[in-house]
Length: 89
Length: 265
Image 1 (cartoon, rainbow over the protein chains, first blue to last red):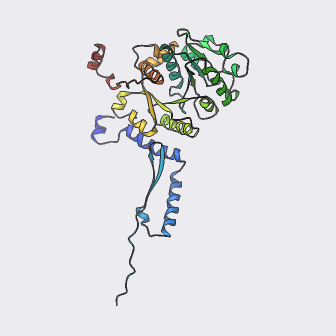
Image 2 (tube, rainbow over the protein chains, first blue to last red):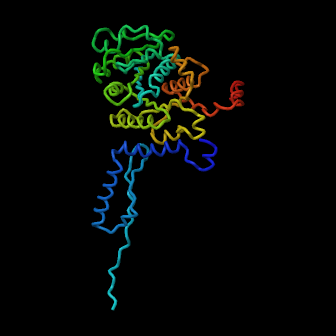
Image 3 (cartoon, rainbow over the protein chains, first blue to last red):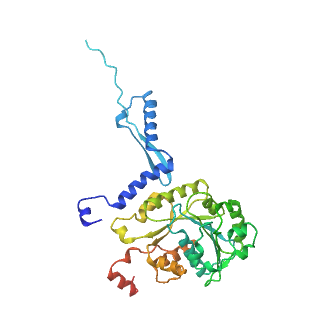
């Protein structure tokens, strides 16, 4: 890492190592590939949408780690309930 | 008191398992413990050369298991430390010559004979590794601050957890403090954050380790070597002593070296 790299805010190689490992380890530990996570996400959207209207575009799903245990975290924004619009004359 | 049986494993090869076993065995024996180390890497034995005992081998692990000799006959006594023994691996056989129950039985027999049994596991997560952990009370996972080694260590830790062998402790080997400082190497904090297990020691990268291997006299003998000091500290921790972690930053500057020589640091 040279002085200039630091000056121009280039990510350190130790940082890229750590970030890459964080992702790899989550997949190694859960046996969940990014593709499977995507399909899980689609299933979740379909299931939940049958009960309540959600903002599928803003939905976030991911795996986080807490020590050595993994957690599936889904953040699903609901759409405000639309009042049945009264017909105006 | 029956012996503590400790297996050292890593997943990835070449991170320092054999070196660690040799050094911890020497350090424990120097402190007065009776130590038996077992080379679990059937077909690729190396612990004998690292300990400098390659010329003394008559019988090996497979000879004991297959009943061609008594356990005592396969225990090679160290040249310098009379309380240190090696049971070498067979060189002309493969892993299928040993089963997990063979290892458990062997270790059981050794328990009453000594204070520590140290088992050097082969790389990988197959049969040889499973044999090496079968009889262990405690497992030390060794890794380097490097992506592939950390990833493999995590796999091994996962397997140890599912086999209910845990909790494993971590040895972080070959840390280069200058590279950590320039942010070109994962720091001990990074590795611990990723692997989330207890740390038992950090061994700095140190050329005296290679020189010691060349001579067949592990670096734990070398009072001035920093890696040797790190291994001696881990040995003390295995015995239940509380030893503070070494200050690895003070490696660099001339002034700091002078201070250290003058005994001020």
